[in-house]
Image (cartoon, rainbow, N blue to C red; front, side):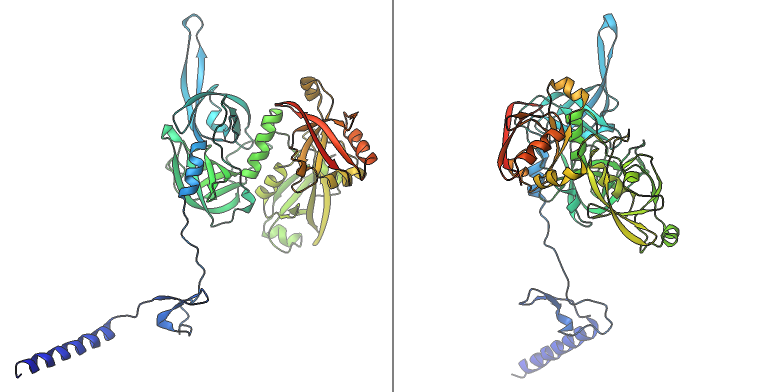
Length: 479
């Protein structure tokens, strides 16, 4: 007993001393406790705010993002592209050597592939290698150097594709994946966040260039140009195009062309062999602090009109020099790249709702875009805009070249409004109307005349698509 008591006393004293030293020298740790309402508190502060205000008690958090499903969905639709230059040497035959290499994205099951113009511009022969190592010779459909987009075609069916997403809905800080197929490595997938939107880095040349890039920090290296930028749903939101670098390698800045602009460009390249650009008819410049003060602007934002082109759409709508454009079709315009992107999606003849500030007051004008020759290809009288608008489609007359090529008279469906009467018939842009009911039509006015006669009744349209065999019929009720 005499031996046990000193040992027990010594143990108690040691424990007390250990606890005392722990309290004196150990700093309190932050521990998270889940509350029943879903918020969280710092346990060491209880329900009161910290004395020095250095830590917030409640916060917002997002769950870890799973990239696996998105990567598996899209990698099979991203291909490698080799652009080669073929030479002919007469009697001695010919040869070809690699000029450049990059990536591309399959956008249709029948073989259309979008890539960057700079990937293919130095070649005249193109080879596409699929993710599963199949190889195809590709045909160049058309290019647009002003947006750095090119469209290729391979002869194959039932190919994997990537669904287009809405790049307008992207938010700064959102996760994205950059998917490429460089140097025949089958696929590369990197992740990053959207760092900024509407970036211009002055890499494209020409009067009609559009630079409104999505900036990300997803790693993009040589060979990834023309590859896919996708969101976590596996939807295409951009075409990876450029990096800013001093070393020649990736340094944290990569740039992609927004998918909404890409869609318009490739549709034009496919349908016309060139891009049909709708122009405002203005010379523009940025808004800085000095201009904002001189023009009595509420914020240092917008695009200043430096001059108005004679006979252009802006002049027709009454715009003047030193008006400041601040919105198009309800979308806020803060800088030149945003303006270029919004207008770049439109065709000649499209009517846009333009918001601008003049002498400190806000105004709205409806501007009809024209082509580079200051002509509108869509012939629609202003008093008839309401009827076409209620139906939900925009029409234009066939060009002389189109009539000669198709050997038919008709009216081209340029755009279809989502949710409209016409859209519910499942008609697609590119449909060529040849008859309204039993009446043949060859001008927009003839279509309008027949629609007016049949207000309140059901009619059918007869026509065709240029690249699809057979006649197509669509039925709807004229309002």
